[in-house]
Amino acid sequence: MSSTNVERHVIQNSDDVVRVRQAVRRAALDAGLSLVDQTKIITAASELARNTLDHGGGGEALLERLADGGRSGVRIRFEDTGPGIADIDAALRPGFTTGRGMGLGLGGARQLSNEFSIVSELGQGTRVTIARWK
Amino acid sequence: MARRPAGLVDIIAAHEDEIIRQWQAELASNGSERRLSAREIETQCRSMLDAFRESAEAGQASERLHDLLAGMTRTRALQGFPISETVSFVLSLKRPLADAAIKALERQPAAALREVMAAGDLIDGLVRNVTEAFARAREEIILHQQQEISELSTPVVKLWDGILALPLIGTLDSSRTQVVMENLLQAIVDEGAQMTIIDITGVPTVDTLVAQHLLKTIAAARLMGAECIISGIRPQIAQTMVHLGVELSVVSKATLAEALGYALAQSGRAVVARRPAGG
Image (cartoon, rainbow over all chains, first blue to last red; front, side, top):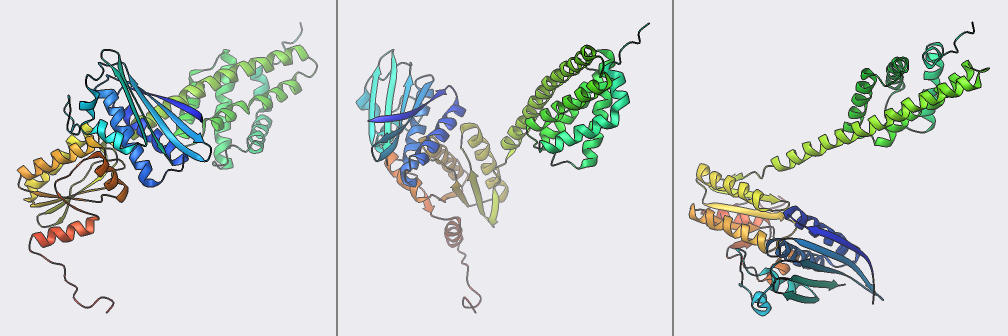
């Protein structure tokens, strides 16, 4: 698999979340994703960017434009050095939240992506990777 | 006693018209200043050359020259001129000055070179001024636009007696949602509204935070005695919301028109055609 063009976006405030969303929109458009798929990956990225900010205390998003033979897509990795997630299965369950949100974001992001992986270590931080292919 | 060779000041004074003419020709040939009339350009060239002569006399850029240039740069920046045009306006003075100096000091190449370099140094300094003035003007514009955007009100519009509409446009962050919600609740009180249509056609992304803001607004409106209808959920947004697991437990309609029809029907009104369509 080959991938090109990695963009790094810092996430330190809510304006950065908007910027990440716009960058993902551009990348999704370039990858030729359908309107529905664009909306899905943008929304998933929005959820994860906000998690990075609210729960991870800020971090960064690495946006990759994917090209694999005839396929194209977008992959985004969100990394923070926050407190980490104690129980990932619980965190993915709809309605589970440690904050004041709806508790739908993380699980929702998984539903909205073709690829989803999460690595988290208590006290070390969390890394969530999502991708959406054309 | 040998006569002191002519300085930049004398050269400018003696060759003013020629310099201006050549300067204008330079500007025309490099394609800048298309947006200004020949007369405007000449006026600007003359006043700047005048201030430049004064600066040459003082040996450094005068206050007047600074102000003149800063004002010119600012006006151009506000009119949307690219910085390159203002910079090339200043740089295009180099050549005519050099030519005039060479002509005036034909037999004194060393003196000519000195004057050309002096003029060049002055002009280089001016370019720095232009860049700074341009950056300042642009910052002014950005600040102004930011204020305008934040003032972009999200108006609550009255569609009918007791029926309000709130057309939402753009990103719904927390601070803006707060303003929107307050406006809406106040309008509900002022109008004694029973129905409120929240139209989200102009909201690009509906994630869980936006959904939560919407739900809070709906709950608050309900406490004020107004029922909410959501309209303008586009197909891709609907699919995304289903995947997210977000449920807006309210009546929702595809378009604002349908929502208005529903609201009218709920309040016991109907829109009736006075004569058959097409008649």
